[in-house]
Image 1: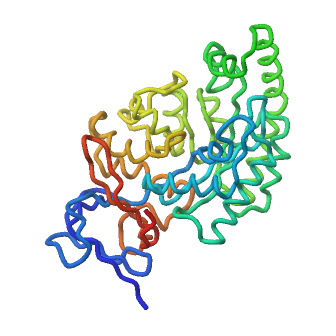
Image 2 (image 1 turned 45 degrees about the vertical axis):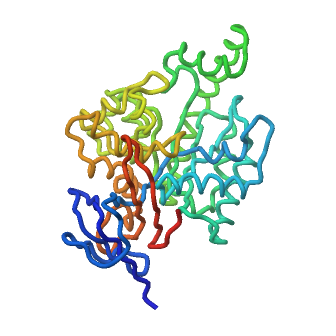
Image 3 (image 1 turned 135 degrees about the horizontal axis):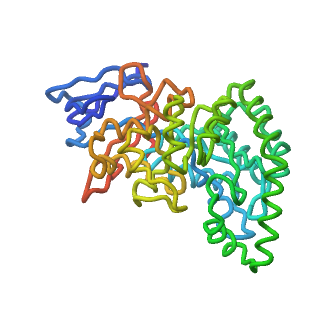
Length: 379
């Protein structure tokens, strides 16, 4: 039997405009967009209908699995808790970011990460999940075990994206050693002398491992059709290296210089939605609002707060002149979907997946009222 749903009396956010009208959903796809007078169907009460959000970089799952030091939760239960949170925030497609390569601050092991990946796969197979889940490998290229951990995913077809990261002191996000000290010395409770030894060790690992690991992982990803992302690029030299390695997404550039170079090279520039909401980076780097105002922002990611993704979409136009709601919504739906080759979703148009979110805005905060994935209500 053909399954049809009509959503009527809605403000429908299309790629270039907002129209008042109805949507016809058929067999999991959008069959028609009908502007104008309302027709019979499920009354949306004038609420917005936007495409389901597409999240490329959230490591939120790890926190559900390891909520406290030395605590490990059931991995399937952790996946279900994470899935419920992202879906009720309007995210219908999520690339769960799993760490590859561990350093001294890591609470998890590579075996833990593989358990989480297996729990995702098992939950997809058993149809337990509300959102559509894929995997993003966060490759800490300075870590000695990076390639060994990467090999744990050599046959995993759920991997869609891999980012090349180096969080060693003096590199990228932490060029300023005072910022690194604030972030790590307090976290690890190290004396000044021990912290210096820690930094020396991390910098030596970066010098030894980062270059060869970047080259190996880039080649492996190209062979397997996995999209590559750079991470925390700070200079045009970093961007040149990313271009040489075939990177397509520039995650969290830390300076406007790097963002401009990435944009000019045709990379999709991704920034954090929490950065948009706060007006600044928590690490003291370039503001996402500044990049948006300069036309340098393509994609937003919820990073560490799932709800920030939809929040930023309805907030950005109010703080950056010239950004329309359709443009902001594209940053959390169409643009991230296309960046990783998911061209069947991210836009409200006939033939696209009926991944949709009903939103009402109360006191400047978007309220997610209903979420559909492939025409089926999931939240």
